[in-house]
Length: 333
Image (cartoon, rainbow, N blue to C red; front, side, top):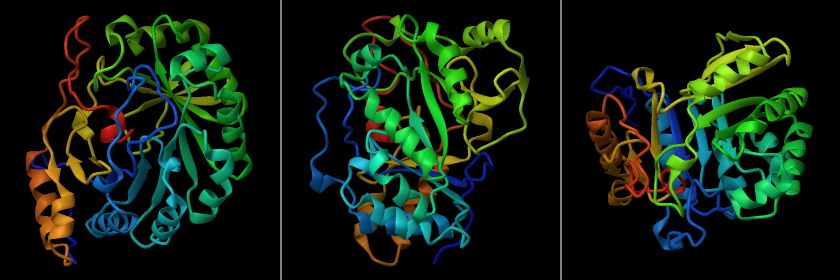
């Protein structure tokens, strides 16, 4: 088994893998994908056995944090089997196993996730307004999402809400959403909209820089920089008045690439060294070439060699193509 550390050409140590288990989702968030999204044929995605084997290879080489993503990971059949298998590596190379979810399936699976070793989940929630949620996601499922969040808390899972800041949609609601989340014991991370994939409409219409959001919040609350770190790109602040933590992810107004420690693998086994780049390496072919993982490790080494120093995200003008043609649900949320 190859145990060589994962280090890229800029001497950044890779310890965090985001692994997509499906590109399918039961929501259709307007900034993420079109209503009539074409999902991958099931025979193109990695099997659960291949996802497990790939994860073990990365853990052997120093990945200590593994996040399972989608699409919506919990729509995949037998997903809990994979979580349980990976959970056995916690304390044996793996420090943390987490999940990003829209919470529509969380009420059903929260207890099983906790039993398998998951200790916290990231939940995508952009609004608590029922009509606005239905318009934004094209699905009337807010009550189910809120029940899922409550079930996660009941199961002992820490919940972090991920909220995309959208001008003209949820900008006026952000303080109330943050206050509600902190009152429930959840942390919140705000995210600038990312220019990935063709959608119905233009992202420039709803792009909201978090520099402006932070200025507005500081007129209401006291934000103090936090020493909290999760291994991701967020910068954190403690809010004195709510007693909670706020994260800001700023791919457009504040590049965070210098400390990048992560790789992303799609559900078809394509390794993207950078979310904002087009570079990729086919791990599926390597997985199926031999059972010794030699080809797989060679492919991973190649990905480290081509990982760029930084992304070049930009919100383009109306009508222009996005920075990358692939959707976030394809890369892994």
